[in-house]
Length: 385
Ligand SMILES: Cc1ncc(COP(=O)(O)O)c(C=O)c1O
Image (tube, rainbow, N blue to C red):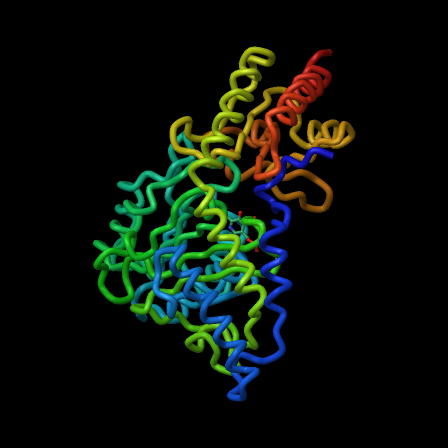
């Protein structure tokens, strides 16, 4: 099997597995006895390493169970702690379902008004339109650092500056970006006033080669979202519950490895990507590469394949041993058109004609050559009548 769905989840890395297993300690980090305190030291060292990787202070790192929890804690927590007169949430089109559905819940249950921001054709969030949406009625705003379907990378610093200037709290979803894009929480936050600008940032371990069930939300020292979980008061009271020390060590290890390898790995993937895109342009010229040609995740290739339903292509490719994604959710067995592709200006029918190929650490040029041949054959089978 050739696995080309690393954006969905990427294999556990050997170095991370070793660090993870090595940190299965006896002792609750909240216990005052020696075993507890030894465990706490390991946990706090992991927190420092995660903070160093994400450009924050250790106290700002809240370990969670992954991206969905982090996003929910940020959005619901910031909403709950908002100033009374603010009732709008600024939501760019094309966000991940964790964000869409959390905001949808806040709209239906809490009366939040959703203020959408349309994307550029490349999938980028236009910073000026984002800025225009941030007024005195905005309780919070959210945005992707990099988009999980198109792979387009946003101007995180520009979005954070706009939020700081407008005095609005911003959450950034860095789940798809982390590893490939350097994350600079303090730099992006700048000298924003308390409670405004970049205040929270989500990452998830299983997108980085750490185990599923690990992740973090960076929460600025200058912000106080309400917690979702109440209990023992761990992690500044923001996320009660006995802390997963081994998971924290695994996340720290995965982030550090990604930092150390980023330049070389991004260049390697970008080269394979460019070759694949050129090959497709020659052999199947109807296929359109979506996203931003200049600023994209190097491992992601998002394709519009006119005349072929993405789900059918995915099944054909699966039979040939290639795992790829349509990128969109499947509800009751029926492929939904991708809301992300529709946000790029495509119709619902066209938004079903997409595939997302996402490469990772294990992907080789030879695999992508085989994949390109299989894709061209499958596409021609579906479109030649
Ligand atoms: C951009 C983005 N945000 C959030 C999530 C949710 O993360 P998790 O799978 O860790 O819950 C994902 C996962 O696909 C994602 O790609």
